[in-house]
Picture 1 (cartoon, rainbow over the protein chains, first blue to last red):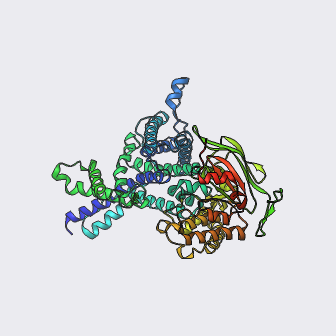
Picture 2 (picture 1 turned 60 degrees about the vertical axis):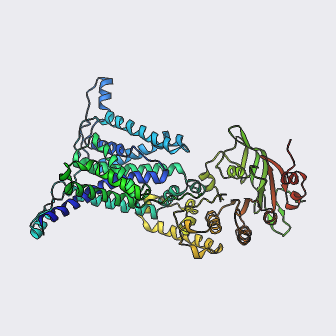
Picture 3 (picture 1 turned 90 degrees about the vertical axis):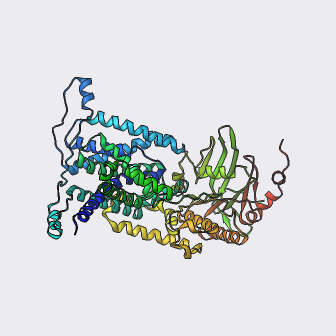
Length: 328
Length: 273
């Protein structure tokens, strides 16, 4: 096989794996949008906050250390423990659930029946608040996240492909793990929404608030549930991204990568978020690989948006979104 | 004249009507400065078909929304099964055994007919998330039990053929029937129907009337309904409340209401001063 083609296949595979992470972030958006009609601008910051909290808890960092020290004149920074990855993850999930409860109690509850733009603005406010709050709580330095996920080149794939084609594929172990975890997460979500009482209630709320109320579903409970799940998805995304490139402010910007994914896949479709993420992941890597060198590179910054724009023109509801038909 | 004793009365066709199930006492509801309901009192008795009628904008739907917890009245008391009801959210009212349908059908358009009706059983599903994950069998048994109830209702309302059809694809008349099925799935003590026959043709109206009577007869469900078609409503109901401009202007059997001068005026449009 020609070298160029093999190279393209390798780029495609890597694109797919990057796409999985985009899908994960987009999934968080879709869940909240479906259930409450809110575009949660803070979803990216949630991922950052979740990753920060995970690192903080795992390394025994004292939250608000800077604040405490400057007020009380103390000098504490660490509790002096290192928790195992799973324990830290479980505790972080708890923090994200708490966050969901606080968001429902102090923001959503007061904005029920307000126009969408007001709710959107509220999530922008929430995003910047959470950014600062995360900094205050855990410090703004770049942190290394190590929850024991395998990293580095997958030797087996490298070796096997080298023996077959005379060209070894470079696939990162972390990407493989991320793909498996994402697949499990999505399967779990689908099973949950199809086969559990709460899942059925969640679908009902996503469909019609009034009807949901009339069959005895508490909207507040479902909102807390959905924001908790979105927080959990943000944690998974933040964990993967953080393990890859460190936990730092730029992590919150992956939300911007999710936007074209949503435009492509549709704001209301879980399969759309997944397929959209994969298309964007592969598309931007292949474009950069094939056309990039001709036009001076750095196409990854804008390619996704251009692709999404083209899609918008021809299919405004996205690939899998519900077509909006207004009867006149 | 009816025997209005606390233990109930017997209808002309010989049905036994029980004691008071729900009582509205001096309900007043306003939105901003606009009064939707002013000082309205009436009761609904066990096993009864009770209609609320009146011209457009009389406050009928508002009253139904007060009963189902969608609106909270500024004044007045709601009594249900002998106890005064504190202000409640709609989902709490539903859990108490009050189910409803809506004037503009509110179904879950994205779900199948079966799934829609199954949501009516949500308040009966007790198995929680954790045990559902740990012990699949328990959830499974519960699902089967609820499924049987739902299938019985599907048979009852003769909608077997559309069980798996997504609701969005159904014609209007059938949607109304599915909405009734979902309300029935909750096995309500009190069933509220907001214009169950609006927009239907004669044949569909006859079907719906028959189902309403059958529900009342077979399950003994107490029904409160709003309906515009006078012919239908006089045939269906045991007693009627008549509202106009947010006030109660009449209350009694179809015959009593028919001969009530205030009611005749309201419908024939005598000017209000």
